[in-house]
Image 1 (tube, one colour):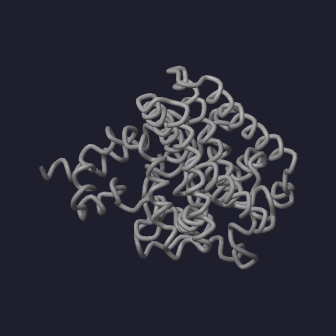
Image 2 (cartoon, rainbow, N blue to C red):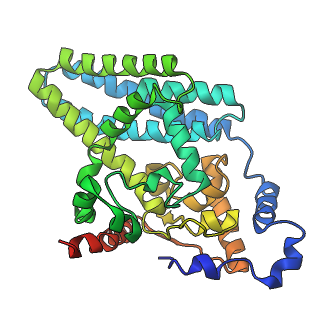
Image 3 (tube, rainbow, N blue to C red):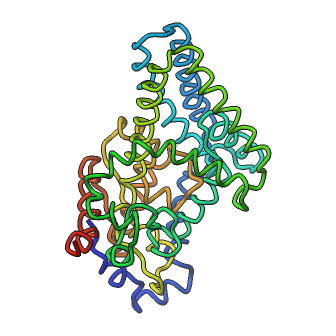
Amino acid sequence: MVDSTVLVESLPTPAREKEREKGSDFSELSRRIADAGLLRRRPLYYTVRFGAVALALAGGAAAFVALGDSWGQLLVAVALAVVFGQLGLAAHDLAHRQVFSRRRPSEAGGLLTANLLLGMSYGWWMNKHTRHHANPNHEEKDPDVSPDILVWSRGQASRATGLPRFVGRHQAALFFPLLTLEGLNLSFNSFKAVGGRAVKRPVLEGTLLVAHFALYFGGLFTVLSPGKALAFLAVHQGLFGIYLGSVFAPNHKGMPMIEEGTRLDFLRRQVLTSRNVRGGVLVDVFMGGLNYQIEHHLFPSMPTPALGRAQVLTEAYCAELGVPYHQTGLLASHREALRHMRSVGEPLRAAR
């Protein structure tokens, strides 16, 4: 795990001033990435990937109708939780214009995937995620580390009141149970945001959200008895939330936090706060390429299949600069994140 002291130690040194006159450290890496052709669109890849997810969704819906009022529907709920996770990853790639270079098709695909199929506001999530990318792990500017329920630094813990103070004492143990509510939390915040400034097309987004839940709940309570419908809802939404958390939590949780006033160039701000996850093809599919989190933050519009090659170039370049580059296995990444959460909650446990 990268220690917070690297935020200072890895700043550009005077020895590189002449080199930096020709451009920033990031601009040289960007040139190497572009020369390797890693930013070009991959339409065949996304056609196959999105087609497979669409077929899985259609298959899940067909199985749901065919099974009828049966407890076997819980197996369908498990399968659809995975499909919904993949839909979330598809919406993510569309939002970053990894699929289409132009805004209109990216936005249309994002609205269809996020609002209609997932029940999550595309505009709200994109606004939030853009701010995260600009300032990852920044205590004041990254919405993903705001102390809404969990605390991410000892400073936040010392200032915590109410629910964050209560939960923060045992947040490492509560993290995965809380993730079971994440899918519903995204939908709840989406409806809240429809009337706010973060959503540019509130009527369109609101209509698509209502259509999603009318179809979702209508299907559940038409095909299933109330008890089975509620069981399906709990299994599907709970596993969907855990899936999303298992994809996004390893990327930054437990990496250095940036305090107000800390000065870092773009490359170091992205590399030092991000963690890559090793694991091969299965992890690539499970995490939708977000296991290459460092490269994704440096080049957000890079198509998923190019991230593996970019990882090799980026790690080598960081070694040239002496910039710490952190990657680990999937289970180890969760251990690091949970260890960090337990550590920052220590002042709250001690204060009892």
